[in-house]
Length: 73
Image (cartoon, rainbow, N blue to C red; front, top):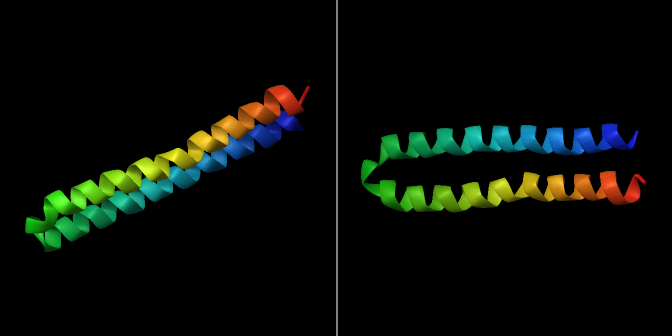
């Protein structure tokens, strides 16, 4: 049961991140299409948000490994 819980934790975190990256990229391209002169400012903000968005599954992987190797013993 522990392995299933860890797999769900990591898998759903990755799924949520993939959806988030898709929405973020789509909105970025939409906004650059509307206002091309804002590209540098929008790109900076997009990369900051991508970094924050990418931190969520890494925390999930850490918690999953903790549960698998420490608690699951």
